[in-house]
Length: 182
Image (cartoon, rainbow, N blue to C red; front, side, top):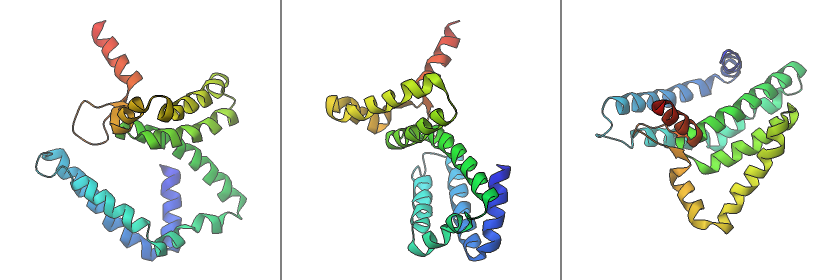
């Protein structure tokens, strides 16, 4: 988080017009999440609507051009190595997000990014088995379309609550059940 804050501080110093836009959108998402935590039944789509507005703004062509800031700064070796590290951490965070949101597509995309990390960090078991797992998951589209649809519908994670971003991976859920039994 400290590295993200340093990079954001530098980014917003160089792009002050984006700071107000991003802060406004972040406040909207924060308010929607706070309301959802208090009374989820009144407006369960508030978080989704706030998130959609955030994504719509961030995919605006003018904003995208300004977000290419990283490519412009990549001539600095220290900046480049820092960003490589941050992108590695992002791969892990995307995988966690995929589990928490029961998002199959993000799970597979993040899994592919993690596969590169396993090779780079010489994680022997993971680098041997993980590419097979990703390939088998993609193969489900044709070999077991019903299973693929179930996973796409959010059954890739265990959801115990209607609150967004609290689903857990199946292995984690099994560990929780095992602990109850003991």
